[in-house]
Length: 233
Image 1 (cartoon, rainbow, N blue to C red):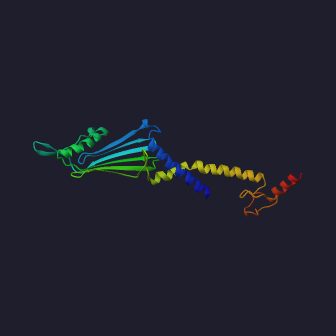
Image 2: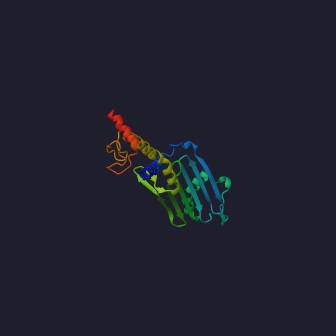
Image 3: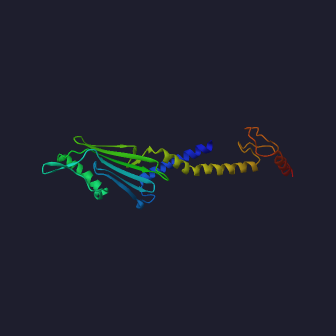
């Protein structure tokens, strides 16, 4: 039982701690290997998402225009459909900047922009999400979920169950392994010293059960008698 507890404590502390370090230093495991996945494109609603991955982190950005965007052509509203080759990180940044100007010009558009960041190794295990919302007449509303701030740093605190369990299992190995090694060394040392391997009580040579803790000594009667002969000699 103690072994399981140590494994869980060391593993969970390692998983959470490493994820927080990666949130503060996302380039720690190699920021130059970022892989952009996407975008996925929906011209009818201006919905796209883009994901960037690198070892230990993932950043997903999704933008959804919940109503069509129109421009005026000869006094008539015409839907704005960007071409697929235009859609990408640069288009998304430009679109974000245009929204306020479009509202000021009387162009009605309702948009959600979601950014989700996850960190952890060997699997992602903690995440945070930020939602920026703009309505036709309501202006911007921005709020963040699952983020704790410590001074100048912000770290994710929303757990990802499967990733956290896996990382705990993997990162707990050093803790449980250390317990096993020290336990084995202690057992060997106490047995050689003629003490109970459970409570270190000093035993007589032929004792099979420790009178202090009631645990089997791990020494057979023959071994005990041989020890007595060696000590007498």
